[in-house]
Image 1: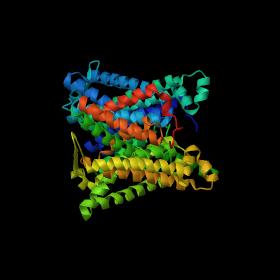
Image 2 (image 1 turned 90 degrees about the vertical axis):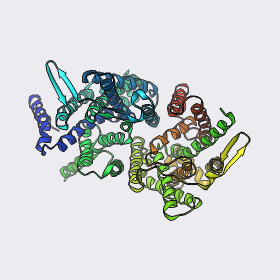
Image 3 (image 1 turned 90 degrees about the horizontal axis):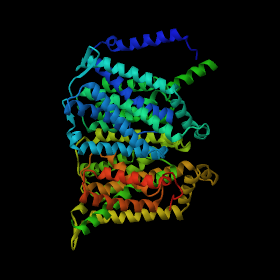
Length: 321
Length: 289
């Protein structure tokens, strides 16, 4: 693929980003459209946390729904019980996710493949169990009455309580996440993660400590999902144990796999398709679960490299003709 | 606290854990497959039995084999779907695919059976035996007896029969099975069907103890996986022992400390085990023992 010269590339990316921002307005600008786009941005930010682990480290973390929920719970507790502002809630969400990731990362340091997945899955179930039983975390009722999101930057202050007002926040979060993931893939840590994944022996010959790389990548990925959770808590004004539902986990996994792994925009496109279906062509909670599962199984069984690969294969075939 | 009663409860629950896990033990040992849809197959089996009984008025004794057959078929469908991934040992994709399969089952069960809790009625649940200070139901006795039989049967089948030898070969090296002149797909088919049938058998025996919900699959998997890991991946005898010990542990933990945090305590137990014996997690040497 040809690459554009740097200034041109910068402008085209900026134009795309600007176009993305006006997309809900171009598609009618209804409250429902803004809500859908807000969900797409939030859930794809959540998926990017998992994307780093799945695509770069090659492991399946099933604890990312717990990181997502951790961010949401931290935001809810800090803003409802302690009356703190959104920035403090944001810091709390990141710190709580880092702490949980550190503990989980240490526990799973020496596990690989299915053992890693099993332990992270069990951790998610345990987190849900604790959230459902501990009154500090709201117990089975959850925490209600999260105030509207108010972020002050210098003298300016932004408030969001409607889907229309949430969209800019969600969009900025998404752009930030994209930037972080892009930078991560080009960073030393990102390169090291890929080498540890693809060729562990070469990695150790190059002097990379595999376990340290794995732990660091885990620590990078957890706050990404937690930040999405932080925003989601304000969007819904309520957190509860349903955040641990496997639905979110499967949504993340499907979002990452649907378009194709190690594509920067892959999780965004995958999540957009899935959330779009749920929002515009919903078949009820159970029907949507059924569709989500079918999409995931279908992709893995018939096109494990994702839809983008299907398209690439076709264009290759066209060239060969 | 009635120690003798708790001991009996622990033994019963332990056998229940072991029975739920037996299918997965074989699947993991022989096909290296982690089935995250395991809990949902458990749920679907219980609901199939309930549905058959409530719509046709069939007895419990007739609903049991029907649910087992239906879930064995589910296992076979899974095998057909995942054959390519299983043969290429694409473990990462396989794991995610089973998670998706579980999601399909949960969605379908929700559409078919609704969100309400239901009760699977077993006539044996009402028969209570009292022996001095302890009591248990006929259903409990049946669960324990059935678990012992299933484990003995699996052990003998793996070690004494031709199919068992083929399964052990598939665990060792799948292409070897083809060299021996046996169709590997057929071996996997029997493994998957056994997984479905075993978890269905467990479900119809154990589900009458509590109300059943279409959302109960998520947590069900955790105990199973602790049993499988503690028992040594794929080890038949180890799983039985681990299930039994885990049953005793959870019973005494919830009686002495707190019933709400039993799942968390089991997870702590697992972590302690992983820290003390990290090598155990990767081993498959114990398969079929």
